[in-house]
Length: 537
Image 1: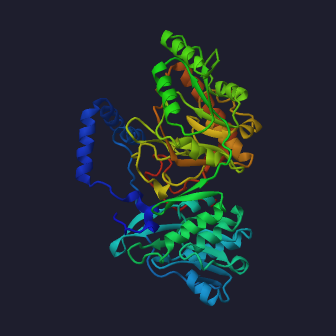
Image 2: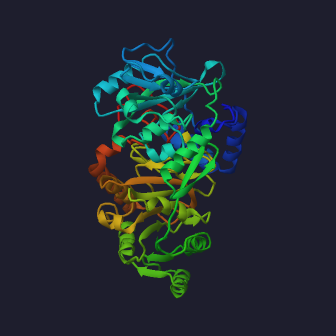
Image 3: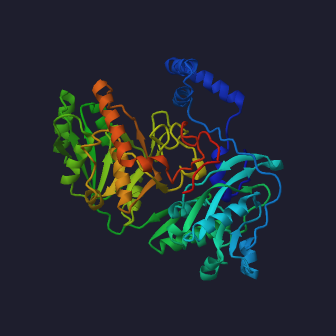
């Protein structure tokens, strides 16, 4: 799908530049010939009738690509509902809301679908505490054909400042307009500005189709990009700067006194991994004050021991952590002895890519309201390994956008815009020391190896902190390169799965930062299920 060259449409470019069927077939054939073992695994799963496994294996071999089919758009005109008015911000600013109790802000190129007005009125009637809401949309191509579903997550002010993932179709109570009004100095960003001046609990996402969006029909108003930038600068209030890349913004926050950061790296032998990790962190970490702590779990290889001795002589702290491998316990011990006000947990199979990775993560982690912060991680094939953790998909939890191209913008620009997630991987996780210690650190008893990061993020969330994904921080992760599976490891993993379900079962069923309309049996942002029956959040 080819979109008009306007920054307002950058959140929709997830579907652009897809190769045609012939080219996709040729690429698949070449990769299958290059990796025959992986191709056979795909074929064997398919022939055995294990379609979900076959799709997963195919994504590993060929990379993920979306197959998002929009739902049919109801025919006809939107119904009239007493007390509800649909109007543009310009119409409201010039003539007021009139007698309406509910106002639906819209813009040229956007139209409510039949049933939307009734659903909006019913949602407000059912929840008196909700003062504004927004829903989902379908992007229309030339001729009005449905091309792309726009399935939005729950309300996230940070995401909205970085990318207009909500759009101009926003319903609000008349009392909100009377109390706050619309800012005429922000053409094209009036709805976003209104939402950002409300409390998070007042704004609700209604997970159902409310409108269509025809980018070819009308461009946003002149000054749209300037309005978006002004809105972001207003929220920074002089304590930072805004970097723009098309329609996606990065809010770079000032850190007048960057604290000591403690980089914590658990390891056991595999000196080639550890050396690559340490050397990359030293060469590509633009941060004024660092300490590196290596947690050594019974390394025995002479080359590893010699390298650890050398590191100790160069000022790296090497902590002996003997006994059965317990990733959480090793990190907890190092965190207890760390001198830094910022803890940065890094796997020994992670390699720094750009020097600003820690600066970008710290700018978020040092905010009072933020807990854990994660980075965008790429695998050795330059594909997404981690883009945040989604709950309830893939059987339990999974990484967002896994196996998508490393340069992909992500669904609704979520691989370009800083946004909230339920959890991030401890392969590269930053958190303030006092917050980490306040929630008790990693649970080393229940989650020695797996899910300790998910559990930590959810406990930080329960304590009132947001978990943030920062796509601007980019590193490489050779996932599981340092792990070996055996019957004991599988048994331990199954016990940790059971522990995660027992502790967070209800939270695992619905991830507010991931739309219920996506198929949980497939990789994230790959397939849809029916929108009907997706419960409210």
